Structure formats: structure tokens, C-alpha cells
Amino acid sequence: MGGTSSATMNLKLHVWRQSGPQSGGEMVTYEARDVSPDMSFLEMLDVVNERLIEAGNEPIAFDHDCREGICGMCGMMINGVAHGPEGGTTTCQLHMRHFEDGDEVWIEPWRSAAFPVVKDLVVDRSAFDRIVSAGGYISVNTGSAPDANEIPVPKVDADQAFDAAACIGCGACVAQCPNGAAQLFTSAKVAHLGVLPQGQPERWQRVMDMVTQMEAEGFGGCSNHYECEAVCPKEISTDFIARMNRDYLKATAKGRKASPGTGQSIGNG
Image 1: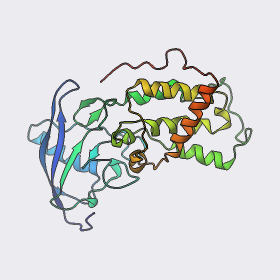
Image 2: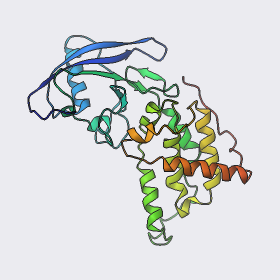
Image 3: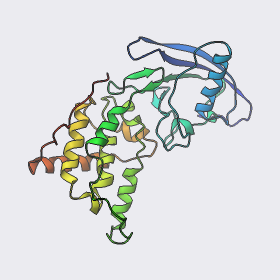
Image 4: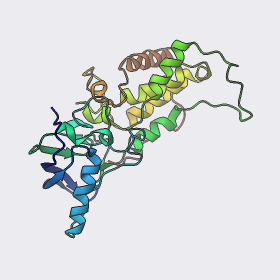
């Protein structure tokens, strides 16, 4: 797929419109005319919105921030695929050259009961924040920063921690999973601390608290479809899920219990 011509394109967009969390929604059709193949997908939506505003209509609401593939804000389903047809790519990095003139494009918000729709393509992903708050940190006394080489870290561990830390929390893994599972996100947040020496003192409590919070948020269970890995824009491996599961079983065997207050959800669905 993907056109290479510099000529502009005309597309038909079917966009999910929903005025609020408690409102019903529907697909609404728009014409996206004179679209440059060099535009990003979000720039194309910007142009559509400018024309809607000029016509006195409500623009399409969608999340965005850095537009550099770093912040994880711009998630949406494009033709049934989280972030669209290009692997290892966020929506803001997806260019219109990957579509053809005359294409029909279906655009929806993330599909997950744990990510309730706020408006149109915007969803509430605060469940992710609560999972991180449950244990995605290292408790240390404040003071001056230690020397960089004070705690030796093997390169294989440093590389693995960096791979896990690449997660931008966009939610594509949840949206694409047929079960709406959040194991890939949670395991990445558990692992990027758990493989480092600094993360070892709280390793077992961390995994217990974060998994407990994940389950309380209403995400589904992982059944190894691997759809999460397929659409992750940072190509995070499902190997981290296996590691998290092993750590959780070990924490259980050690008699660890979730910390008081962990496992509470504000229930925004």
C-alpha cells in the first residue's frame, strides 16, 4: 500500500463523533480534498478541521501533543488498526503517502472499556497513570546524584531496561488486543526498573502492586494473541509479559500482598 505521486489526493473519511462520555456516538462521513501525500495523518485532520470550522461546524476532537512520536497522545484506530497501517509508527508519524487517492478511511477512538471516550477520538487513559502510580518508581533518599559508574550495570541489562523504557503509554496495545489487555504496557513499566540494580529492593512489591492495580482497572486478560506487539509503535516485545508473569508468581510465593490502597479504581467508565 502507499502512493508515491506528489499529486494531491481526495479521501472519504468515516469518523467516530461523540459529544461526551455519556452520549451516544456515530460514524460521520467527511470529504478530505486536496490532501498532500507529504502531510502527516494529523496534519490531514487539521485541514479537515479548518474547513469544518470555516463552515461553522464542530471540529473533530483528537489528542495530540509533540507530534514527534514521543508523547503517546495521538492514538486512534485507522481502518481497524491502532495507529494505522505502518508498523512501528505513531499516528502523528503516519504520512498520507501510505494511502491512495479515493481511499475510504475509517477513524475510531481506542477500543477499550478501560479507556472511556471523552469526546470523538479522545479517550481517558488515566488508568495507565494509576498503574504507574501503584509502583512504577524507585524509592530513594534525596541527595546529590551518585557518580555514573558507582553502580555497575551490565550492558545486557541496560539494553533490556532501555527497550522497556521506550514505552510511551499510548494504549495501542490495549486497543488492538481482542481482550483489551494491558499486560504489554504494565510489563514494560515493571521491567524497565526491575532489571536494574536500583530496582531490586522493591522488585517483588512493585510487580504485585502494579499487576493488582492493572486488574482493578478493568483491563482484560492476556491470552497470547500478540496483537499488542504487532501494533506497538516502539516495537516492545511480549517477552516482557512473560518476565512480569514470572516475577508475579515469585512475589506470590514469597507471600507478598498488594500495598494498602492498591487496586482501587475511580471507575470512569
